[in-house]
Image (cartoon, rainbow, N blue to C red; front, side):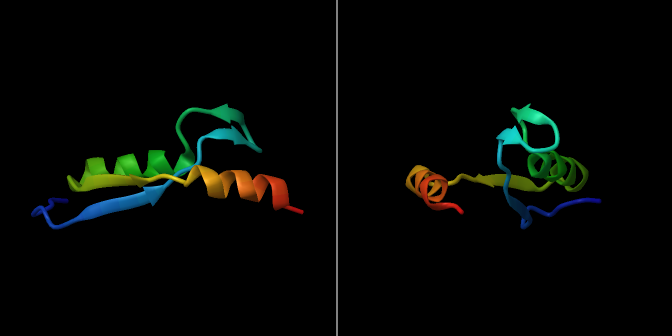
Length: 62
């Protein structure tokens, strides 16, 4: 598959602790996004979680 430069893969992938496999340095979604980018030649943009939101969810999660 070819890309004419107008395609971008935007993804959010959580790294760190994973329920199924323990600690991870590359999340599952990042792996899938990398494969899509490889096959299509698209650029990629990783979205990052804002640290304040992450802390708030930890303290207030049920």
